[in-house]
Image 1 (cartoon, rainbow, N blue to C red):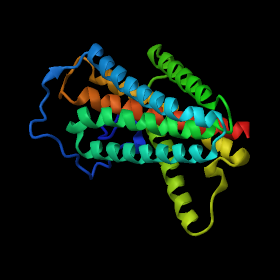
Image 2: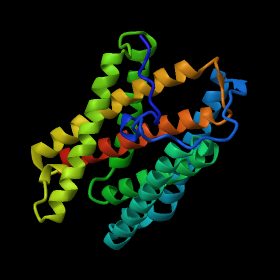
Image 3: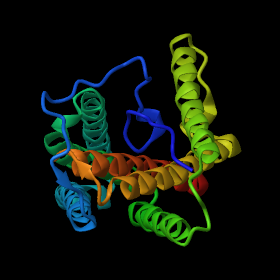
Length: 260
């Protein structure tokens, strides 16, 4: 059964409503047949850029973090948030200008690496080893989800897609309500990982992000061996990377709350 035709990236959270038309290139005609090797090359390059950005952050800041320097921990956290804001801006830009994906995807990979490492290093001071633990859990989940998808144990049907979309939209709505409540002086503790409610909330987010990977796999499958614009492999790679960054941050918060 075919997936609904959506305009966004891998995560339904980043999909544009149908009333918003993405601004595409003047010649948005298929120009080549996308192969699995080409898609894997793009994914590998994006993952490598994220890893290099994260390693650079770790090499520069980890010695101070290891010596329990709280000032540096706050600085690296702010740098991480800055990378996250910049990365999210790139994703929104790509949602409207899809043909820019060959430029915005590598830039997002670098920003995502800074975002993940910044938050991980700031938590590393209080919870030693949490950065590597979260990385292992994230990639383990990704491998399990791919195995379930590749073997056909889980099939991405229209009903499942709608369920994933609804769960992701619910997360976005709850955060919007939480932000509004915070401005009104009524914070929602579970959104910040407090107590059992926080663990359940971030557990729900991790499960939802994991299911979003199934959508990424299906979209790549649908694109392979079909005529596609030259930017499509970067667009699909960006979608998967967005999901993985989201899942890593959620796993990080979940483990941090569990270790408190």
